[in-house]
Image (cartoon, rainbow, N blue to C red; front, side, top):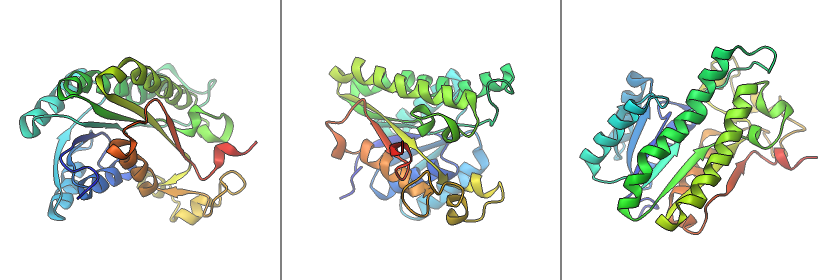
Length: 257
């Protein structure tokens, strides 16, 4: 028995990194996975791998910042699987510009994907979760929503967008609890992913060397699976009495004074 048997889960940003790890873990735990991403060709290949490993998954192109794109995902999900139990709003971007350096286009782009995309996702799935008798929403925030400085990677819009996700999650938890819909946020710290590797950092340990003295646990940077397992807990019935909470996965970063 898997921890997500018979559950239908939509995961955004699933072509790589944390989203892909989430899709892989969910499929192994018995979920029917609707993997979505704007990078459709890469997504298709990754979903084929999940299916070849015995998982039940489908790839659907999604621009999280567009309501009509969400409509396509919802309609195709319902057509194939008949319901929606879980939404993981994982997709996000970061632009390393502070308040003075960022332009309005930078700000709007980050907010459109990181915050508006989360709102549109919840707006799209909640009516169907209500009909289904409940569900779990997992929103990816960041330690940037909790602490300032180094933790936001010098991204003013990123920090603001993730703070909004933190608050919006609590809003959803309170307003839809009576519908048995849970909403929780996950707050990653430094996590080694393929995106980080593309910047020239070749290992988790190399990345972690930049965070020694901030994270408490060696190698001072996590991996995508650490966040995927947090998603799994919040998506599963193991967390059936947990809502409106912040699950911080940062190796102890935010506990330092």
